Image (cartoon, rainbow, N blue to C red; front, side):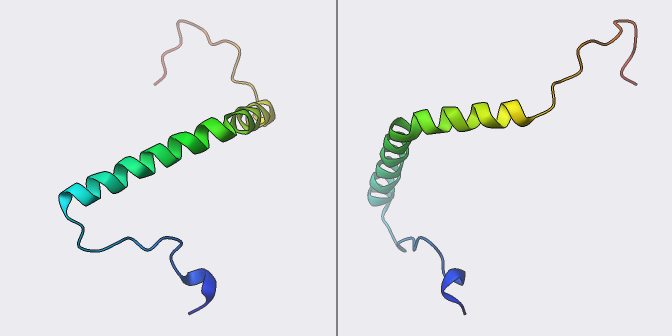
Length: 67
């Protein structure tokens, strides 16, 4: 087994329901903090990706059926 084959996160086993709830709440808070911190970078990246995609078709005939 190579070092990169190991899991990034080892989840605790045998948590009671209350501890699992606390862990999930913490992870949601961590995710929200990361999104707030990196939101500018994420928005810029989304704009970069959107500008690299081809534009959608401009028009279709209204009497054309899709099938």
